[in-house]
Length: 139
Image (tube, rainbow, N blue to C red):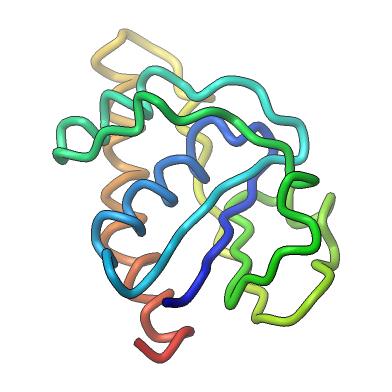
């Protein structure tokens, strides 16, 4: 089974959703993890957006990238520009990919409008990033 690590700054939204979607959509082929350079707390709207897809990340926690140092990953994916700059190199083997995603936590407006931003990012991950991972890993 291939191992993938998604990195972003806070490990609160984008990387958490990517981890949840990869584990659900590529079950049995990929084991996905996520971490951040300045971890905070998993965003409640990220949890809600994935629950709408039948994926529960409600027990997920934000993790620091240091927790994964020394572990092998077949692919390390940065999903925000800050993480790309903060982690210019990843020790060990494996491919490296940057796939910048909009930060849904930066969305303004009503609860419904903000949730729509999380849905949009979730859709983007499912429709574009997951197939790219499949290609990159030769699955």
